[in-house]
Length: 185
Image 1: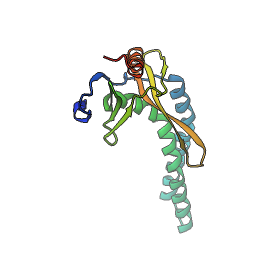
Image 2 (image 1 turned 90 degrees about the vertical axis):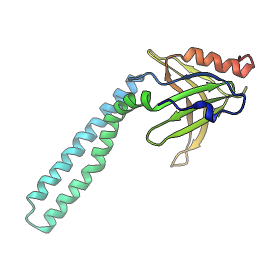
Image 3 (image 1 turned 30 degrees about the vertical axis):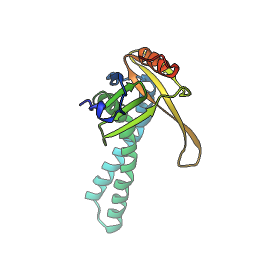
C-alpha cells in the first residue's frame, strides 16, 4: 500500500528515506489516561441509553415515552465520547502502521495517509526549518514543521508535523540536518 512517490517528486528530486510508523502503543501514559478518563463517559452513556430504551418499552403515556426517548438520545453523545476516548488510542495504534507512510527527499518531507481519506502532504526542507527529535522506547518522532493555528475559541495553538513513531528517528534527523546544511548526497 506504499504510494508511488516518484510521481509526486519534482524533476531531479532524490528519495533518501521512506518508512512507516512502528505498530503499537508509543505514548502509553497518554493513551492510558484517555482510556481511563473516557471509561465513565462510556459506561454512563451506554447505561442511560439502555435505560431510555427499557423505559420506552414500559411507557404507559405519551409523556413517559417522550421522557424515555429523551434519555435514549441523551445517552448517545456521552457514550460516543466515551467510546472515542476508550477505543480511539487502540484504533490509532492498530491503523497508523497500515495507513500512514513517510518519505524524505533531498528537498522535502512527504506524509501520505490512506485512511479515512487519501491525502498527501509535502513540507519543504529549508535551512530555517525547525527540527526536533523526540526519543521514545520503541520508536522516535522527528518533528520538522510547526504552524500556529487558531482553535474554535480563537486561542493560538501550535500544531507539530513530522514523522511520528518511526524506527530510524536518529538517521532521519541526521539526513534532514544534512539537507539543511547542504551536505546531503
